[in-house]
Length: 286
Image (cartoon, rainbow, N blue to C red; front, top):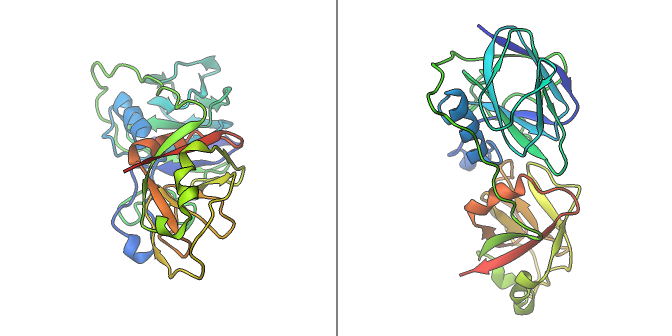
């Protein structure tokens, strides 16, 4: 059995697969990779099923040492990759000799990458998933120096797996398509009409739970309190200060502030790469 030891972990690195859907009624969020497509591609490159667990790496600063040879692939943001002290290519399968260091480092404008290992990261399964839930504490905690992770059984190397292609940039400002409801009627018509004309700034308080925004507040026309309601990934909730937030994979499953709309699922991967200070705009679709 091959294992991987964590030698350096400067920023948050978490184990993620495609998530644990179906448990919201018990207060358990979906979790999983913030960009499931990037994780799936990394898995395909090393010959894994798309749902195998890999590592979601924030900003780099991660060094691993494997006790045996392995195949890896890094996708998502083009973070730098070094194997055995030498630069290694991003977005393709890379052979790693036994006891070589795997170093994932920072790169300009790059926020999150997904590192797949042939065989997958073999942490215990909790409610059908190996994913780290940073809100509820399910799954393994973020990686720490000295952690040792098992690697699952390795299949044959894929034939013609090719290379990953970096996703085209979402532009500036990042535009997220927003379908209104269920509580858009709590806000003044003028605020809703101008949502597509104003830019919001991404706050440094953002995380895997939510992207928090700053900008011209959305004005309410309804006062009073709202009973807690169910929440989904991509829900745009607006607290009392009028500053919206976009819920991501580790979101709470209920909330008592009105949800003005829900972001198109196809646009949520952009949120995985938003950095503090980035500009964001909503485009209302009906």
